[in-house]
Length: 344
Image (tube, rainbow, N blue to C red):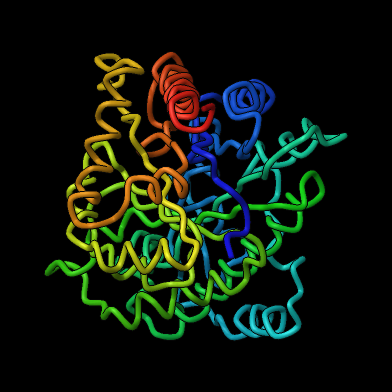
């Protein structure tokens, strides 16, 4: 059974270019009042870079200026032991994310206190594949290729997700946590030597720490069958650029929908292209994206019933006016789709 009805509601991917957490929260709450997400602020501090933001406390992690790496020359055993003890005891305090690393999170919780009527609240954590391929050791070898560190990383991120979920439940009992995996676009290429089984196992370790609604966001093309095989409730894709790639997996999409899965259609481009789009053009593009699956035998009504509307990716690297236009259009496309299909 589906944990909540998506209802073509708008959803935010996470990052914005703003540096004032209060301004960022007000922006998110204005455009996404039903399902707001705490804003990540990568232009505020390097500590809010998506590969740094959830690194706090990881064994051997070093941040020097705008560089992050894991120093394996250190004796990592004490820190690894601390991580595994916290994991075995489900000690969520280990996964605490300080305001220096995520200024938008405490501001978000404060902005929703006392809580207004909400459908859900959303948070996000960087996924183990993307984190493990982006963060390297002192010799510039990705930590994902170190078996001990890869296993530790998945457990570390699981506790980060669990702690964050607990914080968000202070303002809403229904939580959505996304695992952001942009590097899944490299899966299967000559540059990434990971098996399907490894990817699924690492993702499932993190997902297992999420008690509420769990999703995966990938903002490029990938082998969608891998992500659809996991225990996620929501698949978030860049439908503006890669809808035809998802349509290559109709059987897996059908099975995903049959078990109550939700597709979050990233139909609003998170780029300067947004200035060339209108509500009408994006609604038309969304219909075209859905019809690719309809032609493969998936009923249009099923896609509508299982749909959320999102930007194609986060907006943290863009200008504030462009980001604000993206969020505004996302809300407007959602409203128009709801007018057409839910208000009859």
